[in-house]
Length: 534
Image (cartoon, rainbow, N blue to C red):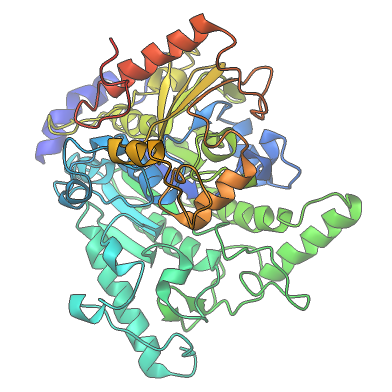
């Protein structure tokens, strides 16, 4: 008998849940949208058509106060694969950037640690088959921002304007690079890796590939699910789309959607594929359904077409599970990596951190459940490992808490507060309130005192993020962006239009104490006065 079965068999025979005792560990499919706010999901009262995603909520549980702890791609994805906060990273790359004792600026740089203390590797060690498809963004960042170092690091370059449908050499290089990225990602604990985008579409550095191909990603997911049908071992599948991140899939040029539905379906992240994919309804049907809905409701937003296409992809996964008989014991988790609405990305405002989260598990989660208390992206890994009855190594440190009791039907709060981190800001979110503190490292604070201006002599203090384009957008859209202390009553002011810091000294002090409590996790990361507060 395999070692993992010796460890887990007693637990399997006993069962785990009350009242839903089950004899098998569940499969897990984690579906991650890219830059999706709640307003593009129908069951969150979005003015869109998403029947497949809505069905997951209708037959599962919808979380109405779910949040990412860092609202930009790679740190958000890091939290969802490790259960750790940004400042608990211990990779060499991270510590080279922010040595212990130095303040960090939470930005779009994060890599998985090479000791594989992540959910995929741990589940694999516990007998799970593990799969990855889609966007990664968590290794070798020096190969993502530019292709100048590709050749020296085993990847092949090609002209940016080369059409792989015509230039066979370019196409072969693209296939080679895709295979190399698959090898890199497999090292983090994945048995199966396919349909990979190392990061965003532009990081392929080719004009023809800078377009979404949802079908290619879903085809890779279907192949993995088919491989697991009839197998004894449970599986974990991580499905991360590039969608609806830019280039804007809903953008029309001369009546066409060049970034999505009207681009050549055979152009993929590995170059040109020989046959079209038939895993979803046709692209033409997406456009037809959108036009029909638009006639019925002229106020339908343009990005509703984005929602329809992506909803078809989610529906295809659910359909495949039913066809293979795997639907009866599969936990589906659906969420997004960050919001983007009204400059929310790279901020701690609701448009950046507050996101859709749906979990569905037939015969375990009570259909139509809703959970209103605050949860965070660091909670997903503890939940998965808990319900999968995984033996967790002592080295696996997590900041999150398991939501297993919620899936069982216990709707009590699992936490009193959630720490948020972004740029030079830290936040505390509770069920009702949010506190945001902006504190710069000592050297920047000194420059501010001396009257130095930043960003071309325009700002009295620097943007909170190192990504200047996103930071400028966020600062312009959010009037309190530079305020050192911010408190919002999300019950009466869900859109954060009034900063009430200073109106209730007791509330202000309560949040300062909560912030100090949470930042004690990182005594080696100075953040203003909070490290010395008791």
